[in-house]
Length: 127
Image 1: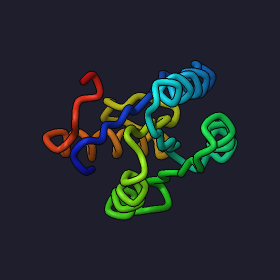
Image 2: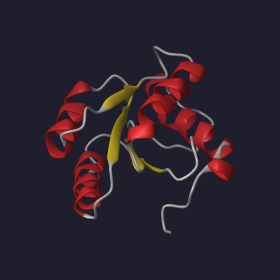
Image 3: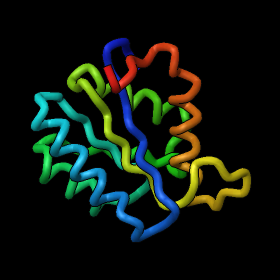
Image 4: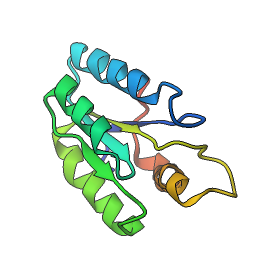
């Protein structure tokens, strides 16, 4: 991730806990504040990306760690960030800290780990 950009990863306890609703609200508020947003969705969920795109007018991208290796996910993310001030990443269902993740839950954990390793190059979103 290049300097001057920041990212949010929104995760929840499972399906139906409100991740999409919070993500859509956050995307809208950030755009209202004049920020260029780039929405992402962890996993092979195409319904949520359609909502992201409808709210922002910016094509939301899927980051699916089941289908793509970590290096490709990182490249896809970085390819979009020159056009955005902030990335809002809606995680898949499940926790980000469990050592016993099911296959569909690993995507959020993998992205969390990738960004945690890069935190020294990330601008704090609170600035």
